[in-house]
Image (cartoon, rainbow, N blue to C red; front, side, top):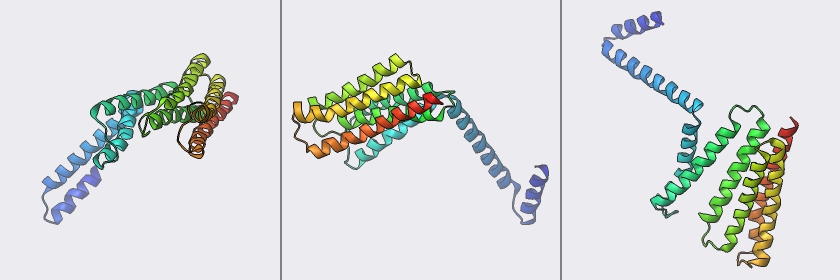
Length: 212
């Protein structure tokens, strides 16, 4: 390193350049590298910081749409949904922290993300929020109760996600038969089918994690 520094000094001197520019460039580069390493160290070690970054990244989506007329959010909505994203991300970090089972980590991430998107789609992106939307709360409740009973163990979580899959399958039936929603049946079944597949995939991953 000393030899490299001396070579740089000689090169700049031979070209008639002052050494102040070299010293300033080295200072900026070194300070930037130290700050970058420090930030990466904090992010790697602190689950709260990682969760905050995730929440900020997700909220950029409605914030970007709000600037261009796609969303019409006030600051209350940003606070509420920012808090929910932060809680979901932090919960995932705390649950999988120190766990090497990749199937469990992916299954938990898929379950948390799908549950959050389910709530987001029904109470943020929905044009008209009706009583039919609240049936999706039953799916979330089934998952929370199942996770509590399973104590987040892989075998129990597989059963909890299976319960969420079955509950999600009942939602379009209730929406079309009981609530008689005006949305096209194909759209209702297709949209719910996506969540059914995601919850079922998470259940299979938890089952695989229990075996390994």
